[in-house]
Length: 187
Image (cartoon, rainbow, N blue to C red; front, side, top):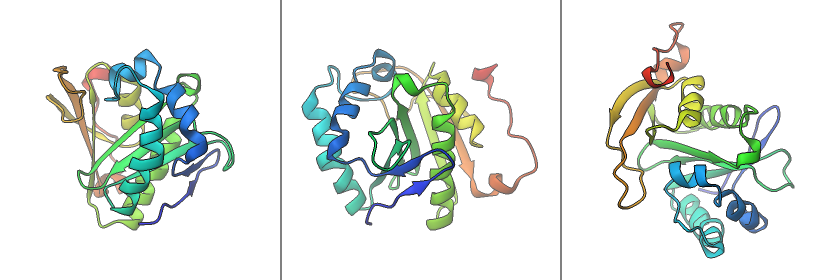
Protein backbone atom coordinates (compact mmCIF):
# COMPACT_ATOMS: atom_id res chain seq x y z
CA UNK A 1 0.00 0.00 0.00
CA UNK A 2 1.09 3.55 -0.60
CA UNK A 3 1.40 5.50 2.68
CA UNK A 4 -1.61 7.60 3.59
CA UNK A 5 -1.89 10.71 5.74
CA UNK A 6 -4.49 11.22 8.45
CA UNK A 7 -5.51 14.42 10.18
CA UNK A 8 -6.97 15.13 13.59
CA UNK A 9 -8.01 18.49 15.03
CA UNK A 10 -4.42 19.10 16.20
CA UNK A 11 -2.15 16.75 14.25
CA UNK A 12 -1.13 15.30 10.93
CA UNK A 13 -0.19 11.63 10.86
CA UNK A 14 1.99 10.51 7.96
CA UNK A 15 4.80 8.07 7.24
CA UNK A 16 8.14 9.07 8.75
CA UNK A 17 10.53 10.56 6.18
CA UNK A 18 14.27 11.24 5.91
CA UNK A 19 13.98 14.55 7.76
CA UNK A 20 12.66 12.63 10.80
CA UNK A 21 15.81 10.56 11.43
CA UNK A 22 17.13 13.08 13.99
CA UNK A 23 13.81 13.20 15.86
CA UNK A 24 13.57 9.39 15.99
CA UNK A 25 17.18 9.12 17.15
CA UNK A 26 16.67 11.76 19.87
CA UNK A 27 13.40 10.24 21.13
CA UNK A 28 14.91 6.77 21.35
CA UNK A 29 17.65 7.99 23.72
CA UNK A 30 15.03 8.33 26.48
CA UNK A 31 15.47 5.72 29.23
CA UNK A 32 11.70 5.33 29.74
CA UNK A 33 11.11 4.73 26.03
CA UNK A 34 13.96 2.20 26.00
CA UNK A 35 12.44 0.40 28.98
CA UNK A 36 9.01 0.01 27.42
CA UNK A 37 9.61 -0.08 23.65
CA UNK A 38 11.72 -2.91 22.20
CA UNK A 39 14.30 -0.67 20.51
CA UNK A 40 17.99 -1.56 20.44
CA UNK A 41 19.98 -0.34 23.44
CA UNK A 42 22.17 1.55 22.98
CA UNK A 43 20.15 3.21 20.22
CA UNK A 44 22.52 4.42 17.53
CA UNK A 45 21.88 6.84 14.66
CA UNK A 46 22.06 3.98 12.14
CA UNK A 47 19.08 2.37 13.92
CA UNK A 48 17.00 5.50 13.29
CA UNK A 49 18.17 5.64 9.67
CA UNK A 50 17.28 1.97 9.12
CA UNK A 51 13.85 2.42 10.70
CA UNK A 52 12.92 5.57 8.79
CA UNK A 53 14.63 4.99 5.45
CA UNK A 54 14.32 1.21 5.04
CA UNK A 55 11.86 -0.51 7.38
CA UNK A 56 8.95 1.94 7.30
CA UNK A 57 8.81 2.16 3.47
CA UNK A 58 9.24 -1.62 3.17
CA UNK A 59 6.47 -2.34 5.69
CA UNK A 60 4.05 0.03 3.94
CA UNK A 61 4.90 -1.39 0.50
CA UNK A 62 4.52 -5.00 1.66
CA UNK A 63 1.38 -4.37 3.78
CA UNK A 64 3.12 -5.58 6.94
CA UNK A 65 2.95 -2.56 9.21
CA UNK A 66 1.59 0.93 8.68
CA UNK A 67 3.68 3.45 10.63
CA UNK A 68 2.31 6.97 11.11
CA UNK A 69 4.54 9.78 12.38
CA UNK A 70 2.68 12.28 14.54
CA UNK A 71 3.27 15.97 13.69
CA UNK A 72 1.72 19.30 14.64
CA UNK A 73 1.83 20.27 10.94
CA UNK A 74 2.76 18.40 7.76
CA UNK A 75 6.18 20.07 7.44
CA UNK A 76 7.52 19.74 11.01
CA UNK A 77 9.48 16.89 12.65
CA UNK A 78 7.59 14.03 14.21
CA UNK A 79 6.74 13.83 17.89
CA UNK A 80 6.20 10.07 17.99
CA UNK A 81 4.65 7.23 16.04
CA UNK A 82 1.56 5.04 15.97
CA UNK A 83 1.84 1.77 14.07
CA UNK A 84 -0.66 -0.87 13.12
CA UNK A 85 1.05 -4.21 12.69
CA UNK A 86 -1.33 -5.46 10.03
CA UNK A 87 -0.03 -9.04 9.94
CA UNK A 88 -0.41 -9.46 13.73
CA UNK A 89 -3.35 -7.13 14.38
CA UNK A 90 -1.50 -5.11 17.02
CA UNK A 91 -1.40 -1.37 17.49
CA UNK A 92 1.67 0.14 19.12
CA UNK A 93 3.00 3.61 19.77
CA UNK A 94 5.68 5.75 21.34
CA UNK A 95 5.97 9.45 22.02
CA UNK A 96 8.99 11.69 22.60
CA UNK A 97 9.35 12.61 26.28
CA UNK A 98 8.75 16.34 25.77
CA UNK A 99 5.30 15.67 24.26
CA UNK A 100 3.89 13.35 26.93
CA UNK A 101 0.94 14.40 29.07
CA UNK A 102 -0.70 16.60 26.41
CA UNK A 103 -3.22 14.08 25.02
CA UNK A 104 -1.17 13.73 21.84
CA UNK A 105 -1.11 9.96 21.77
CA UNK A 106 -4.77 9.45 22.64
CA UNK A 107 -5.80 11.67 19.73
CA UNK A 108 -3.36 10.01 17.32
CA UNK A 109 -4.26 6.44 18.32
CA UNK A 110 -7.97 7.21 18.00
CA UNK A 111 -7.37 8.45 14.43
CA UNK A 112 -5.47 5.28 13.47
CA UNK A 113 -8.14 3.07 15.06
CA UNK A 114 -10.83 4.87 13.09
CA UNK A 115 -8.82 4.52 9.86
CA UNK A 116 -8.18 0.80 10.39
CA UNK A 117 -11.82 -0.03 11.13
CA UNK A 118 -12.99 2.15 8.24
CA UNK A 119 -10.53 1.02 5.55
CA UNK A 120 -9.59 -2.54 6.47
CA UNK A 121 -11.59 -5.73 6.86
CA UNK A 122 -10.67 -6.10 10.52
CA UNK A 123 -12.90 -7.00 13.43
CA UNK A 124 -10.44 -6.45 16.28
CA UNK A 125 -7.23 -4.73 17.24
CA UNK A 126 -4.88 -5.92 19.95
CA UNK A 127 -2.63 -3.98 22.31
CA UNK A 128 0.11 -5.16 24.60
CA UNK A 129 2.73 -3.47 26.74
CA UNK A 130 5.43 -4.30 29.22
CA UNK A 131 3.95 -4.41 32.73
CA UNK A 132 4.33 -1.02 34.36
CA UNK A 133 3.79 1.05 31.21
CA UNK A 134 0.98 3.12 32.69
CA UNK A 135 1.10 5.80 29.98
CA UNK A 136 0.49 3.27 27.23
CA UNK A 137 -2.25 1.59 29.26
CA UNK A 138 -4.04 4.90 29.81
CA UNK A 139 -4.00 5.61 26.06
CA UNK A 140 -5.32 2.14 25.29
CA UNK A 141 -8.11 2.48 27.87
CA UNK A 142 -9.04 5.98 26.68
CA UNK A 143 -9.30 4.81 23.07
CA UNK A 144 -11.71 2.00 23.95
CA UNK A 145 -9.54 -1.08 24.43
CA UNK A 146 -10.89 -3.64 26.91
CA UNK A 147 -8.60 -5.25 29.47
CA UNK A 148 -7.61 -8.77 28.43
CA UNK A 149 -5.19 -9.82 31.17
CA UNK A 150 -1.55 -10.26 32.01
CA UNK A 151 1.15 -12.67 30.94
CA UNK A 152 4.00 -13.03 28.53
CA UNK A 153 3.85 -10.64 25.59
CA UNK A 154 5.40 -11.03 22.18
CA UNK A 155 6.78 -7.56 21.67
CA UNK A 156 9.77 -7.49 24.03
CA UNK A 157 13.47 -6.91 23.63
CA UNK A 158 15.39 -10.19 23.18
CA UNK A 159 16.37 -11.57 26.57
CA UNK A 160 13.76 -9.50 28.39
CA UNK A 161 11.48 -11.66 30.49
CA UNK A 162 9.15 -9.05 31.97
CA UNK A 163 5.47 -9.85 32.05
CA UNK A 164 3.02 -7.84 30.09
CA UNK A 165 -0.45 -6.41 29.86
CA UNK A 166 -2.92 -7.13 27.05
CA UNK A 167 -6.12 -5.55 25.77
CA UNK A 168 -8.46 -5.91 22.80
CA UNK A 169 -10.69 -3.53 20.86
CA UNK A 170 -13.42 -5.16 18.81
CA UNK A 171 -15.46 -3.42 16.16
CA UNK A 172 -18.64 -3.91 18.23
CA UNK A 173 -17.02 -2.03 21.14
CA UNK A 174 -17.08 1.14 19.04
CA UNK A 175 -20.86 1.32 19.09
CA UNK A 176 -21.34 0.02 22.61
CA UNK A 177 -23.10 2.26 25.10
CA UNK A 178 -21.57 0.21 27.91
CA UNK A 179 -18.51 1.79 29.52
CA UNK A 180 -15.30 -0.20 29.10
CA UNK A 181 -14.56 -2.55 31.99
CA UNK A 182 -12.12 -1.35 34.60
CA UNK A 183 -8.43 -1.88 34.06
CA UNK A 184 -7.06 -3.39 37.29
CA UNK A 185 -3.56 -2.01 36.63
CA UNK A 186 -4.90 1.53 36.49
CA UNK A 187 -6.62 1.22 39.87
